[in-house]
Length: 522
Image (cartoon, rainbow, N blue to C red; front, side):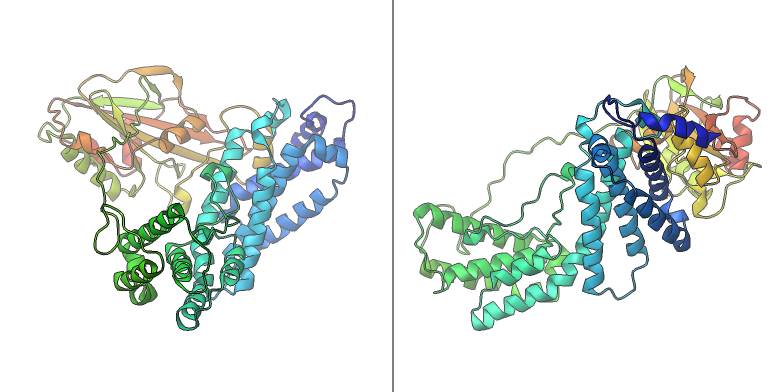
């Protein structure tokens, strides 16, 4: 039945009104999008054997779409689907990498992810027109943003590996400049370009170097490690101080040169311990080496500036403290309607500060398996705490291992083809729960609207990892503990998880099943 619905709706795929319809291509593209989205979301649960069947199949399916008019009219979904394909492919390459990774493998990672990034950037999400069919297949802003974050996370994972691979080559170029006065900037560019590392050669006036773009752009550039960047800047400064550099500099150019030196020196002394303790940096790029370099620059480009100390570095000017805006996350008020709730008055009066109370409560939860699964919020005159969403057995007991914790419960309650195909793609029956505790002197009020799965996920996402510091010493001797339980049920035919409001179980039942009965014992 679900497949029939999909065929009927597939003709609505085009983003703009058009007399031409591409029913087969529409179905192929939408189905590939859904399957690749599910593959991405459940990647860690799929075996290599399963992935090795899914990805080639989806590749061959997408290759059947050859109508250029269709791909132009549906460029948004078309490019996004290809981005999903290449992202899943590089994830599989990454997962199957050997312990000793050769450069050819790293370059394959880089090139495959580059395809994912290029198609992602071609999606042009911001210029979408509203499309009802996108709602049915669950192609929305959250889907788009999530893939962007996933790509950025993978880039962050790859960045140190790419840097480490070319680090020995950068050191060889450094030693060549030191021993033979060979300043091979072309080779520096070559090794950096293997992985699109953000090599900056602006000190010698090369304006064609890579430039890092804002995070949100998902740019192809990878950040050059500080160790490699220090090598590149040292070679440039050394070249400028050598006889091989013959260009005349204006007074402004000279001042810029020494500003570059200042920045280089400050990064040498202010770099983190991992950089400073690196054997090469410790031996070859230390303050003593910097002093020699500074004297060489002074010999060729004499320069004095008020405020420079004996080492040639400008004295630092401590500016006034800039206030840092601290994000405060609040628990909803009124609280979303729970599956069940109960308030315990005059809770632990001997624990007068919120910090002491949190230590008591969090230790109980950690003992019950909730370590690193607690989330905090400001609420009323006290605070609120929730647990992460967890899957549990039908008898109420926790599930052992990694399968206990979930990040995604599916949709937000709307019927969608995404949920239908999800039910065919994976086994989905389960019970899920989230505990919420509110500690305050005032009564907790409840909304008439229940918490949705999407609302629970957003609540967890927008939380503090621990009790905020400004609340730890706050005194609240006369306080109530309100426990709210949010229980979501999902059946075995792919239904969207629904909040259980039957009230068959009490708060005490849920706490007992989770091993938390001691929370409310006197």
